Length: 142
Length: 141
Image (tube, rainbow over all chains, first blue to last red; front, side):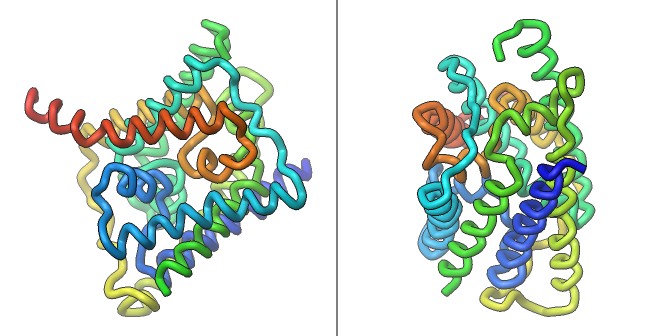
């Protein structure tokens, strides 16, 4: 087995532990798009907003600190500006319309056997696969 | 106190994403690209994350309230709806195109360069635009 799979499993367990902490202590579902989205569109207010901003602070800050000390693997993101903007818009609009992303629907939804989480995951995986076929293999833009 | 726990959960989430390789778009696109050099790492990440979460959901049934809160989230809505399918499809298309979803986009901001910042900016713009877009479409329907 490749070492990367082990890192994946370990990292996954840490992600799950983060979600478990957020659920059992704060009573919240750890969904990245919901947390960021409700802060930027103004639907989160007061203490709720403060709590979400703290979550975002930890999410951006902790990896930044580790990257500063130990370095980080590159993100290898496309340098095509049109691709980046189109992808960002699709992810932003899509996750807010669907009310969740890989963390909320995927991790938190599937783990409680939520039908919505499972259906959302099937559709974004399918769309992601089709996106690869279309943009990489047919159009060759990524 | 709740904010301290939220910051801690965010930090753990970010470190988990970083360690698992999910901030590397090649790994994510490698998983989605079943006709290329297929990379199964994402399945290990998702599987690993679901385990502690499944235990946590079980524990919510054994205790009445969260340690620092008044109530656990309500049971998932049984209704699927058009928005869930349309939204997830749009999200998946963008996820494949760039290889980034919201969590890793935030976690990798420090070393993602101008491209990562631009992606995050476009994503935030999409999130801000969604409530008015939804109102417009629901008034047309």
